[in-house]
Every structure is written in C-alpha cells, then in structure tokens.
Length: 316
Image (tube, rainbow, N blue to C red; front, side, top):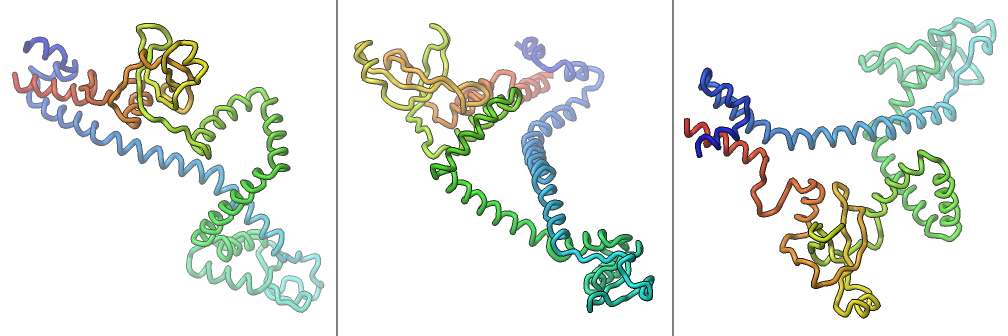
C-alpha cells in the first residue's frame, strides 16, 4: 500500500525525498500556496483585462472624440498672419475687442484660457504647451473632461442612449431597420460567424423570456449507454406523448463548456434518470467539462495530490 501511494506522488517530490528530505515541506507548502493563490489571482487578472479592454476600445476613443468635438466647437485660435502687423510678437493683443495671449508657435489664444494654463504649469500638473492647439487640449481636459465628471456623464449618456435605442427597436420602423442591418451583417463572410456567436450569447443572457429549468435529469444521448445532463424545460408535446404511449419531457441538452447553447429534444420520462443535484451544480459540471463533480472526490485534483503527498511524507 505504501508503494502504491508513493507511486502516485508527483515525480518532482519523489526526486527530493531521499537526498533532500528537508526540502519536502517547502514543496508541499508551495503546492498549497499555488492552489490557494491561483483562483483569486486569475479572477483579478480577468477583471483587469475586461477593464483594460473597455478603457482601450471604448473610453479612450470616446474621450478623444469628445475632446475633438469640444475643441472644434469652442476653440478660438488666432494665427499671427491675421493679427495687425503693429501688434505682432506682442505677448498680449486685442483682437475683435477680446484679449489674446501669445503662444510659442506664434498663435494667440484667449487670455482667460492662457491664464488657466499658466496656473496648471505653475502647479506642475502639465508642461508648457508649444502650440495653440496643445493649449486647448490641456484646457479642455482640465475644464470639461475631468475623470470625476467625464465618467458619470458617460454612464448617464450611455444609459439614456441604450433606453432610446430599446424604445426605437420596439417600434415597428426600428425593428425594420434593425432586421435590414442584421441581414447586411450576415452577408459578410467572417463577420457573420463572430456576430452570430456573440448574438447567441447575448440573447441567452438578456432575453426577456428566460428559459425556466425545473430540474436536472440524465438522458442517453447521443446513443444508448452514453449519458448526458439535461435540463427539463416543460412537459412534452401531446402529439409525441400519444405516439409513444407515455409521458415525455422537453429537455435542453447543453454543450460544454458553453451551456447557453445546446439541443432541444423530447425524451420518454421512463428513459430519464432524476438527479438530486441543483441547477447550479449541473452548470458547474458542464462548464468544467466534467472536472467538477458534486458530492464526489475528484481524481487528479490538487486536493487529492496534496493528500497523497501528505500520506507519503507521513509514511517516510
């Protein structure tokens, strides 16, 4: 028995048993630490990746676009060639009864804007802008696009836009245009596969009429002797029950590791096995591709490996 347990110990541990017996506790502690550390670490990494993706592909382009629009609509930059020759190269000029300050590249911006920039330079928050356009970049970011103002406004506008889009799609004309749009997408070879997969996932998650699963059963599919998990969605069609002469279930057989897709089938009630596991536990089995089995000690898991290592160390 001791030899069989020793054979199950990872090779790296066996190699250090005899010549470096004092090294085994370190390996065991390291193994346990990895088992504890990896799940939360990977969870944090995934959320950071999602946040970085949203920032890079949504927030940053929106920020730059907002800055461009604000500059295009509010910027007042006067070029030196448009200034009377008698006032050129002066640090402050009057142009159309307004006071303008000179920038390094020879352009002029309104003095209140330049005063704000000078305060920011004095505080050390920015370096000295070299062009009038750079002055307005910093001024717009400081005045209108502060993070504590930009992100709440973005969330409010996004929610408002989503609400209006939903109302528009609910109307007949909106549904007409959206249907035409999806038909155009389906004509693009590569895009239609990606869009179709994403749409299936989003429709499953955001559907207004969520599928209600009553319980979990096991059915023989795709052939006799092979059992698959299935969710009972409803009682079967009456015509099928009359044809087979007994009650039937309508079931969804989900696919691994993405349970939002699968196959809808009608099976005889007598050919199903009622399972005692919950819907959440069944989803864990499907998503993990059978690695996680409720109520059963998993072969090959980290915990079993640790138990084997502990027994081997205790037995010397």
